[in-house]
Image 1: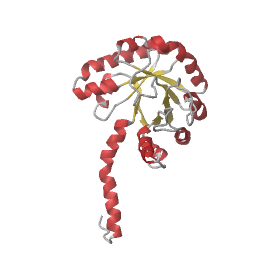
Image 2 (image 1 turned 120 degrees about the vertical axis):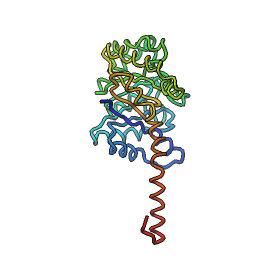
Image 3 (image 1 turned 30 degrees about the vertical axis):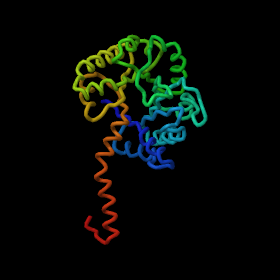
Length: 260
């Protein structure tokens, strides 16, 4: 079975756009777990554009109390700054079940590529070891669509990583164009190569209810999907009607009409 880890970054984006504490990130995570999600993912960035260090600590407590996986994503090479102690320091504090290393920079709107393992394996290796010493399973963000970056996928296993997370943005784009067949072949091939090297395979980025089924049918052995942007967008649409009806019921009760 493939596990679902819900990324709640977008809840924090909405909160931060107004200030204050609403919508509450922990409450949103709790609702996802109550609905059956297997875990929670967040990707704190040094500029605190969404998830903040305090959120990481609070979500780590929630995951521990509920006995579910907490997946912490981030760039381990980004230096600490005010309000951001650094990725390894956050992992040390909350001991997530999984630490997913991602090579994103401050200027990126979202993660858009995996590691170049031929180039990056050497500097990743000691970080993998440090995180595993903390009790974290380590996953490395990886490309399947770029032949150069996917060429060294076996290096992820050689440096001791437990899993890779396939960056599925290019697949989602191809799916929207109706051109997913070739892309799915590439993803399946990389997944099989990774598994042959002893790596578990996760996947994430722009996966949605529309494209997830086809992906899982074509790519064997995916252990976990991390989904946030599409899931939160879908929840806004699917949940708006019920929410509006709830407000109307309050107004009707206030007006003395208990029929709604």
